Length: 375
View 1 (cartoon, rainbow, N blue to C red):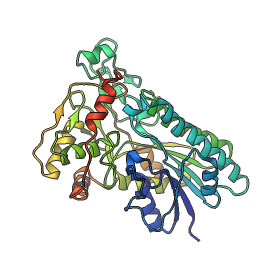
View 2 (cartoon, rainbow, N blue to C red):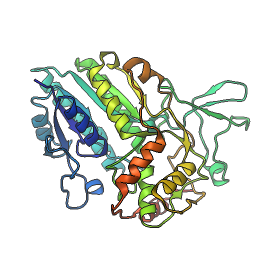
View 3 (tube, one colour):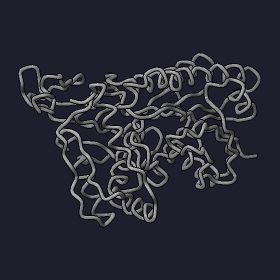
View 4 (cartoon, rainbow, N blue to C red):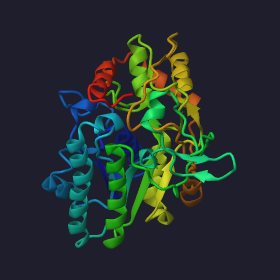
């Protein structure tokens, strides 16, 4: 019999793609999701894209009774349920902490109870690139800097790149898993807590656990009307409404954008490769692009002639450069990203055709400004 898998947050963007991949490979899938209106709309209808073979349980990760029901006969768990977004986390502190931190503890306590009767094969938790803060940098003399910071004063002066203590420029490098986390937002703190809780409890109670640190995920099904979702979806929402993508700082921030299909493939490997247990892995494409170039390429791919608007502002909690070294996932799990960004953007453009996006970027920007979370 195929193994049965629970995906918390399973009706969402990443969870639904993983469900498709698992179903295609003979697994049974149950999804627990609260159908958050910020993602799924005020009517909280199950999304059309969710496969009919997925057993959807509508409920909250913080509800122990619902979680116990979902766990009673599954062999493995993917824990994706979380509030997402750096900016919003800085003013909805209680809710982010309650959903992400307490929700994870409820899941883990229920798993501990169930494991006494029947063991779990795997627990895979979605961590985040945000836990790193700034990525790894190199000094002019070749030395490495793992704790680069940008002061409020330098940001006010428009000096966006971190520098050495003597003012010397730093060169961004691919960030390995060994870099010490630098938690610069409530969201980052909560994701690190999720990661550490799962690995710690997994080790203590013999629940084989793996943490995957996702970088910037994009692709079909990403919520277009959520101003705190992935940056490509936010840019697409603006372009579909005939407005320029808004870019903070000068747009030269370097990031890695990884297709959701590659993320799903990495998740399956974390489920099936025993050597992954007890470890954390960067999951990205292995490529680097600036935010400004990304916005221009998306506009060209969609077929609109709209240049991005460079605001020059900086959001508290944002970082300048962060992109991953994915070597550990490649050598340990056999992970190999397949989707080049140009092909992925073509696919995204096809999915966007005819879709309606409510542009809420202005209200999200105002919410940050009134709380002095922009500079």
